[in-house]
Structures are given as C-alpha cells and as structure tokens.
Length: 214
Ligand code: SAM
Ligand code: MG
Image (cartoon, rainbow, N blue to C red; front, top):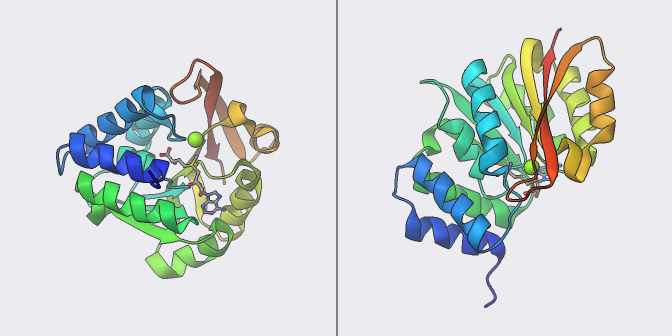
C-alpha cells in the first residue's frame, strides 16, 4: 500500500480512539499491535509496570529517550501531576511526525515536548532549552547501545539529582547487558529488575529501575 507501519498505527488510533482520551489511544494501539501488526511500543504488560513507577515518582520533570509513535509518551504523560512535563527525544523524523499526531489525538500535547534529533546532541541542550535543574524520572527506550553513554551524559550534564529514577526497557530482549552491568555494579545507583515479557509476546523481557544516589 506504500504506507508504513507507524502510519497504519496512526490510522488505527484516528479510527478507534476517542479524541482527548489518552486511555483509548493506548488501548487502540495495543489492540492494533496484538491483532494486526507487532510494533516496538513498551506495550500493555510492561506498561503497567511503567505506570506504577511513574505514579510512585510523580515526576515534575520527566525525560523519555525514544518516542517512536508516542505510545509510552502518552502512557507517561497521562499520569503526570498538574504542571509537570515530559520531554521525549526521537531522531527519526517519520516516527516523530506520527508521534505528534498520536499525542495530539490524546489531548496531552500541552504536557509533552517532542525534540527531534539524536539523544547525544539533545541531552546537553536540555537544561538551557527547558530551564530544567534536574530530571525526576527518565525512561530509557531508544537503541540499546546508547543506554550507557546517555546515562553517563545525563550524569555529566548534571541532570540527575539524588533520588532521580531511571527506568530502562528491554534490558533482557533485545537486551542491554552493558547497561545492567553499569547500574548494578555502581555505588551511585540502587537498582532492581522487574520481570515481564517482550511487548505483545510471551518472551521474557523486563525493566530495570535504578535510583541515582547522588
Ligand atoms: N518508547 C516507545 C514506546 O514504548 O512507545 C518505543 C521507542 S522504540 C523502542 C525506540 C525509538 O528510539 C525508535 O523510534 C528510534 O528511532 C529512536 N532512537 C534510537 N536511538 C536514538 C537516539 N540516539 N536518539 C533519538 N532517538 C533514538
Ligand atoms: Mg522498548
């Protein structure tokens, strides 16, 4: 048909989700991915773990690495307290264009800043661009070989404070062994694994939650 998977996912949202209803956007995407086409969203099962961590942290300033179609973006933003915001980074312009429309459909656009470009370029500009002192919560879900360099970059840029919470997806599948080694064997982090399954499958995967101790 010439359309891409993200474009078909967007169509499913526009057809099946109520405008201004984030939960129905999430459900429409999960339904599309279970019944039509698998896609690399965090998904409903790991999504409920993501929800509990976001709710527990209740971040004022949150960062997401890897927007894709905006599924987890909407998932996180719908749980933010009043006045809080989520910055999400995406370097693929086609994915970013779809995500903007998914976010607009959810009605959460006022809480979300989508920044286009590679994370390594965007992270050092966040403080100045958004007037942030530090991040309360970071969701790592971009390419897995960037987890360690971008975590170190967040540290170097002074974006982490004592108590900042990092949550990393896909630490088992496709896997991020270097990241697990970094946060688990590091006195500056307290780290814990949440076992689950790869989105829309029965394959083991999980999330690693790491609290920065300063
Ligand atoms: N978080 C999304 C969700 O659960 O709905 C899924 C994100 S998908 C697994 C990873 C995304 O990260 C892709 O869209 C990819 O283009 C983007 N990405 C990968 N490396 C990146 C980088 N260094 N900077 C910005 N975006 C990146
Ligand atoms: Mg993921």
